[in-house]
Amino acid sequence: VTVGAGAVLEGVHRHVEAAGLELAVDLAARGTATIGGMIATNAGGTRVLRHGSMRAQVLGVEAVLGDGSIVSHLGGLLKDNTGYDLAGLLCGSEGTLGIVTRARLRLVPSLPERVVVLVGTADLDAAIACFVAARDGAPSLEAAEVVFADGIDLVCAHLGLAAPFPAPQPVALLLECRGRTDPTAELLDALSPVADRIGATAVADSAARGRELWRYREAHTEAINAVGIPHKLDVTLPLREMASFRVRVRDAVASVAPHARTYLFGHLGDGNIHVNVVAPRRGAAVPDVVDGVVLELVAAAGGSISAEHGIGTAKRSYLRLARSDAEIAAFRRVKAAMDPSGILNPNVLFPQ
Ligand SMILES: Cc1cc2nc3c(=O)[nH]c(=O)nc-3n(C[C@H](O)[C@H](O)[C@H](O)COP(=O)(O)OP(=O)(O)OC[C@H]3O[C@@H](n4cnc5c(N)ncnc54)[C@H](O)[C@@H]3O)c2cc1C
View: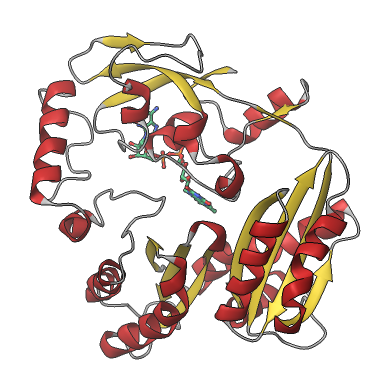
C-alpha cells in the first residue's frame, strides 16, 4: 500500500483490511501514531517477533531532504540493489535527515484464527522458559509480552478490572498466536514441556476476552501516567540477562531515588523492557540521575539504551554508552550530507 506520511496507523489498518491484508506493525498508540512518525522512529510494537519492525515493512519512501531536494523511490520491488537504501536510512532517523511525505509498505495476509493466553508464573525465569517453549514449538506465535504483579494491580485499580487469575501471580506472560486454522492446540502443545513452571493460565475463548487480556498489558502506559510523569527508559537486554537486570534495576533506582516506584513491562519476545520510574504521588519528582544509572546498567549487560523510542533529546547525552566515537562521527557526516544547513530536528540524536 502507498500512503501519505500523515496517515494514522488505525486508518491504514482499516483501509487494507478490506483487501484481506494487514500492516504487520501494531502498537497501543495506533489511534494517533502516523506512518511518517512510525518510520522516523522505526516503531516496533507487539508483532516484531514474527514480522520485524517498521524498517522491515518499508519498501520505499518519498521524502524532502534538508536542502529541499525530493527523493522518491516508491516502486515497491522486493529486490532492488541499486545503491544506497535511503528508505532504510530514514527509518529510525528521528526526523534528522528528511521529512517523509509518502511510503510504500509491505502487507501480510490477515490470519483469521487467533488465540490469546495469559500465563502466570512464579518468576521471570519461568516466564522466559515458557516464552522459549512457545517460540520454538509454535510457529504461529506472533506476540510475547511480559507484565508484573505490581503493574497488573495498577492497571486493575486504574480501569476497575478484575484480577486476571484466581490467585495472584508474580509475573504474567501474554502470548498470542495467529493462523489460518485455530492455533490453540499448537500453543498448548508447545507449552506442555514447561507445564511445571506455569502457576495459572487464562485462555481467551472469544475475541472480546482476547481484547480484555491485552488490556492488562496495553493499559500500562496510561495507568502509570495517572500516577505521575514517569522517567521512561526503553531498553533491550539479551534474554539471559533479563532476570538479573530486573533485580538490579530496582536496586539501582532505589540507590538514587529511594521513594520512586519502578514499573517494568514490555515485549519479552524482543528482549525489550520498558522501565518506567515514577514518584509515588503527584508533585513529587524523580531525580534525572535515574536515567544514567539505569542506562549504564543496560550498557554493562550488553543491551541497547533505546529499543524503539529512539534517542530524541532526552537520551542524547547517553548515546556514547551505545555508539563509538567513530560511529557518531559517521552519523554526523551522513547528517551533513542530507541536511547541510542542520535545520531538521537540530537538537535530536547527537550529543552536544
Ligand atoms: C500508548 C503508546 C504506546 C506505544 N507503544 C509503542 C510500541 O509498542 N512500540 C514502539 O515502537 N513505539 C511505541 N510508541 C511510540 C510510538 O511508536 C510513537 O509515538 C509513534 O510511532 C510516533 O508517531 P507519531 O506520529 O506520534 O510521531 P511524533 O511523536 O509526532 O514524532 C516522532 C518523531 O518522528 C519525527 N517525525 C514525525 N513525522 C515525521 C515525518 N513525516 N518525517 C520525518 N520525521 C517525522 C518527529 O520529528 C519526531 O522526532 C507508543 C506510544 C504510545 C503513546
